[in-house]
Length: 179
Image (cartoon, rainbow, N blue to C red):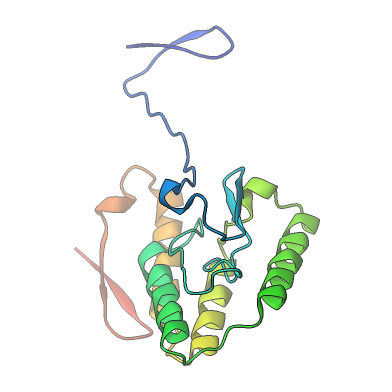
């Protein structure tokens, strides 16, 4: 297989993987008064990366990037359910918008590019903890972070084989490798 590279050079390749990224597009919401702006892989304002302040009973689960997906989404769903059942009272629309603006300005001031405002990486653990605290439910057990960090470490050490490794959760604080 021959691949043409943007600079005009040619290279042999076994696999060509095209990654276009994720574009937010919700045609079924067009014309609604949601107050959302979608640009450059960012949808804003979303209070706690979940709900548009102008429509606080609508939730976008999984907008955050660079996270341990299913535990993160589980915590988001629990928070949303707490909002919907009345256990959590959200701030006013203007307060939510101000919080989103402040958080985005802090990230931009730290050098985060606008298109990466939904990226969490290490911030994901504090984010999940804050949602659990605000929602009044149990936070993720420490074993989730520990195992995520081990898999991330293995990914760096064995990028071709890390997915072949298996683990078993032993308790809320401990996991073990399985053969």
